[in-house]
Length: 322
Image 1 (cartoon, one colour):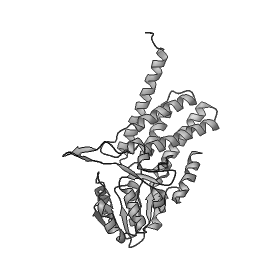
Image 2 (cartoon, rainbow, N blue to C red):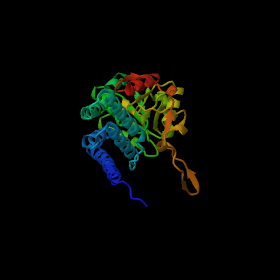
Image 3 (spheres, rainbow, N blue to C red):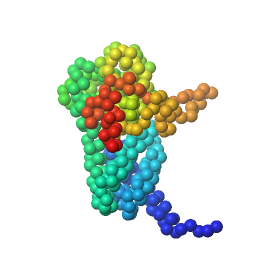
Image 4 (tube, one colour):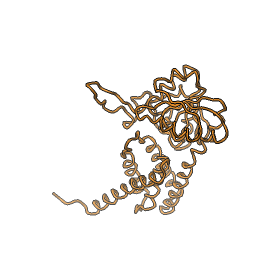
């Protein structure tokens, strides 16, 4: 059997090393920033990869970025739900920056420098997006309100903490958030901020909905249609809110806007689909991690680029990518 080109082997090794470095940088950033956003960590890691890259052409750089994106998407987050939608959206947006910059600037070194600057700027903007969302959400949170929250979201907690610091007095009703029971994390976070919290079973949403003035939830991803992919149970909360004529608002960063167009939960990305049921005492127990809430059930999206109706999302995606 003929031996392969030695240069080819060296190139492959270099690619593997740089891909591993991307994952390492991602994990290091997340360890230093416990509540940091996944997208910000991804952009930091990709920007660092470009800085350290030995690529000499745009094509080489694009190949490295594609491989690095695949490495990041394959990462497992132990004890947490999949982050693949957020990672994919951030990586695709960054890849679009690379293509646009390459078209604008002919010289490779100048292009590389511009990409690093843009990457750092993008990460900085993404880093402050939660504070911008909290400010945009502030007029919707008023004295005497009861706000229903499903599961845990850093963005949602940030909005509620900001409103409480501004002197608004309200209470929160939070679901347990099965199967992770992350509603307990929400409850303790908000109680530490001096916000009164009641916890309910996920199945008690219909029972308490008449006490509620607004539902506020986060999103794992905001789709082209203006619908959202989020923690399991979000859709049924939205359906109950719609039936009771209660506003259902979503707090989400614009870097979670993704080029997906699901029509039902069966159209979700593989990482968000239902895993194989586990069996206990001979009974199959199904635990889908996520569901899809259609735009018809969403009142407003509170984002860092403004307060949007679901129908405005596709326009914003065009601006982000084109």
